[in-house]
Length: 125
Image 1 (tube, rainbow, N blue to C red):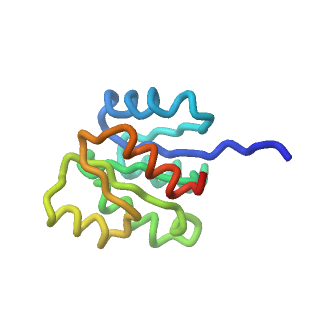
Image 2 (image 1 turned 180 degrees about the vertical axis):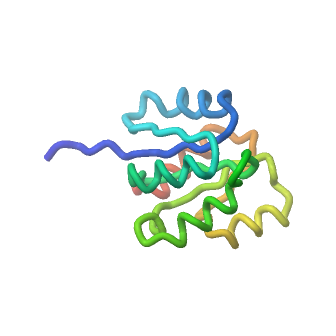
């Protein structure tokens, strides 16, 4: 049986952060998708059905909290693990993240091993 690549949707308005994520994950056999804001994240998630989403909070237009709520409200995307990855580590923002439906919450800058551990935890690898 052929191995099906797991899809990861990386959502951040910073090209630098997206590039760092891509470099970290490039050699690990995942299919990497990117989006630059919440609206694009919703469109990509609906079209591509990723296995996990790493979602920034502070973005132009639709922020990560709103995008997360929209993903959870849709039958087709509500099961996808969503990990918020943000500089906003204040308890209020962490609480908002979980209230909006995220599966987990990472604050930037993060240790790359923590991100990889989260991937394994949620993708069951």
